[in-house]
Length: 95
Image (tube, rainbow, N blue to C red; front, side):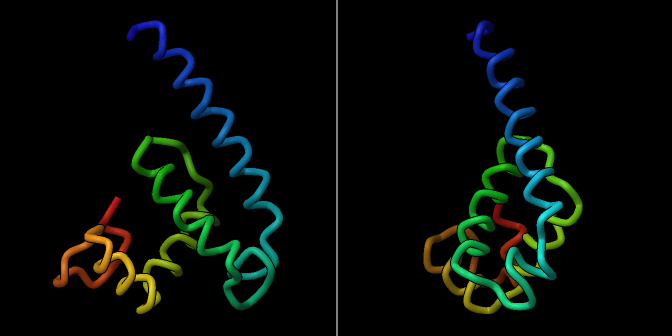
């Protein structure tokens, strides 16, 4: 398993670099403007995975993740999936 560590580090760095590029293209609070699109919801999941696997995420995307996590529908979906408890008020505590 020691041989996998450098590859994991390289993968983290590559993903982080791609997230940097993506963060520079935000068109407002979300990827394409002032309202979230399906792409933002998919990105939200990717950002939760990034947090879980210690991938560095730019501040703009951390803020986007938090905005998404604060949406009642996102919280409801995450509770339904068992990712957060019924008492959790924010989905960001799930990762």
